[in-house]
Image 1 (tube, one colour):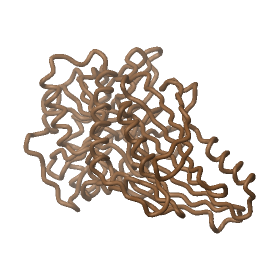
Image 2 (cartoon, rainbow, N blue to C red):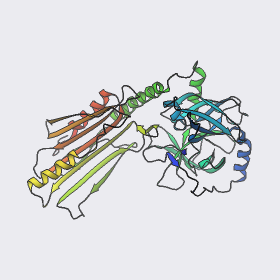
Image 3 (tube, rainbow, N blue to C red):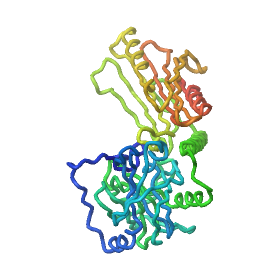
Image 4 (cartoon, rainbow, N blue to C red):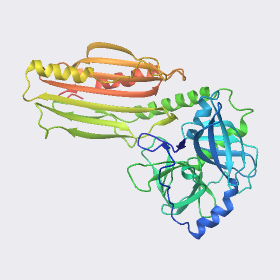
Length: 432
């Protein structure tokens, strides 16, 4: 059984829970939390994804009824299996009284990880998303509700601590516990106004959780109100949204000036921003017959498509190898092996077509290089591709600059454009 909580590159997404695991004990709720839970519990739901064959449970998340209607808000990643594989999966809800019923998927917002479903019961009116949304102040208390680890409905309290700048789309930082299974549940102010939707938490910190801002919920509900009927094929809707993301990502990258890092005598390009962070590494203290220094940059978030796929991400790596005790032939073998033994995707991955690679010896006018570009197409989402660019300098016999750029979920033209930008940006010496 999988209990859903979103993942981006550094977030927890799906936790597998067994009967042998310890139960998570949440702190005793305050009087405010108890009052909120008492008022809200009738509109809280557990959302389950079931295999059609056998009706066995595949994943579990949370959701909440909006107003006095029968629309439920949750995370896209809670409903992703139904959206992408409707022939295999169906959904059901379970309310706080144990009542069950079917779930109909109406709309998804992959970029902000939201979905709207319809069920056969109506809300009491506790959760509303008005046009005028609540203004939040850093430090004020919020209360997140859901069904953690399939243990039962619960409420946890914590503080709002601003908007996260490192994710591509705005998220709210919630300093409070959000456990797997609470994905898609609401987070509300002390007076019951919806502030956001539970979505994820950091694995490398304590009580660092994230919420989807309620304004994105408002926008998705407007879209549902305007559509005549749900999409017949949600894969097409997901693909369209992913194309919108790659266009926005490309525009933001092009508006971010390249910065250059020095690696030995070389200058290497990176995009350094709130979304794309860089780190350095060196093996100079290790007992090796060569030295290696590396700069790595990566987006710290990605777009969740399914439990097996995240996309809409760029990562960059530049590494310089220099011989200290190796002869020319030995170093050539080392550098060649490090260059060619890099994974660029396999032929058995059913998500993508096998990578098509082209290798050439090129020069950008500043540095001669060996370059390989590999492209894989998405099988379920036409017009989307993953690109990998590998390059290695060929100007020295006992020194090698090796670079790698990975771009996921972009159009063919944009993938080539990013590859070209980086090949043209690598240089030796102080050239711009």
